[in-house]
Length: 292
Image 1 (tube, rainbow, N blue to C red):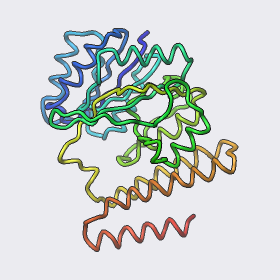
Image 2 (image 1 turned 60 degrees about the horizontal axis):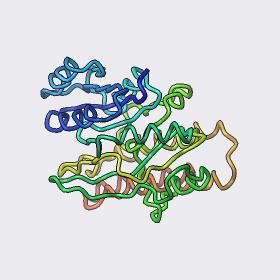
Image 3 (image 1 turned 90 degrees about the horizontal axis):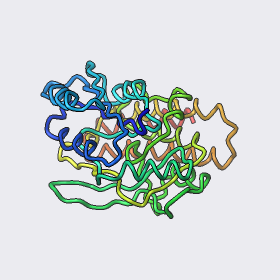
């Protein structure tokens, strides 16, 4: 049984996938499985993946039609057999050769369900260290962490991504947790909220786990009305999920704060686009106010 299953959705990843995969092969922790999902790429991605798989039996290659990162990650979860799962994007790469071993040992020694850490911004060969939740290393206070995450406390510099952590596989599989299909904005925020709530113990490593590549053509920065529909889908799904639990009044309050922040972040994508975009966004916002 593998200790960590690393799940990598790949779409037209030819330019960066080699660096990503090499960072995994160079890990001192050898008991890993690398699950790479080709999501209908039109370049040489599948050829590169198969070449790696032919030289190392730890690779699992899934080739599917283009359905988006969420569907690709879901396929990876289903195929995984490791004790823990890590999500890694195909244009990013791990920060050091010993990072997976360090994460796994912390999880084992502290009996943690989730171990997360910091990350590096990476652009044009330059690395900038970024703290991801400022706290002492080791087990974090669960209730405090819930508050800081759901309110995205800026003093804690919380980073809402499914990367930069390992997650106990049974949390995902026993609770049938998956990424929302056809949701491309805030899909991380959706899954993160669930795993943080369900985890018994969460631990922090005060080291960067991976290098997050910053590109010039980030489609998530462009205004799309779908940002609002995605956020609405995430909110509805999370309301349904948390309705199964007996939340305290304070927990209900900061969950509502979480929804407001997600809407606000979607609204930020408007600037500096057209008045038509503003009109569409206002209609969505008004509908949310009426329904709340």
